[in-house]
Image 1 (cartoon, helix red, strand yellow):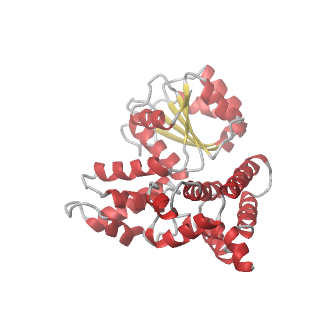
Image 2 (cartoon, one colour):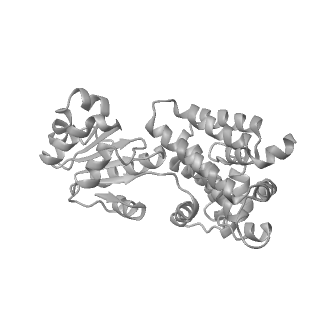
Length: 343
């Protein structure tokens, strides 16, 4: 069965006992790991017990299709349910998983982790269509979803956080759930559990310069037509481990926000004030200049090009980093701000 974002969170907190296998797929590796760990904790008493947990790869199953059924049927020393995790999965193990679901031995719970799978993926279709299986997409947090993650994190820690701090953190984080939590833990450690509400100043002090988690440099350079800055930002972002798809989607979110301001009735300043999360004050000047320079129709064409680049990453065999760099550099080269500077 196919679960939406809200259903996925609920499932991870309380897995359906009728489900024997779960597919965690999507570009956010940190979220995949987080959900896998949560499901592991729900399945076995001691996650470090080697008799209760089995680790496999998609390559191992492709070479030895019977391995999945064998691991699932193995007994746990001392009793209890077994947890089988399969990493680096893909469509080549679809038939293996299909056979397992049709005649699944034992009581083991199987979690399969994969990168971003297109809608046509046979593995994804199998999990979405089988009542004993569940497909959970793991996409990057953004917008209100990311604000909810931030609020929930501090609520669980028993620490308050201001609306301004939530909005700021939502603009800075979101490239990877694990890295997002790491940065939030940094804020919590800086503030202390009994030091009162986390303020905007606290958040800026801790993560204001966090290039690792923010795709903002890439987005601002693209929309601003700053080719040298974009090349530097792309190199740094790829080096830090950001996936090509996350870069495209980060830039797309930025263009959507610019479009919301550029196409709004009234002044640019008033439209910017209505954005949620708000524009980070350090980049407000650049954002305002871009909203004034770009026409809504040109922004739509730029967003279409981003979608085309994402489709090409999934459809062609060309290196994704090359396709993404080419698309962003082309958009930047035709940005209205760049045309004015060149003239």
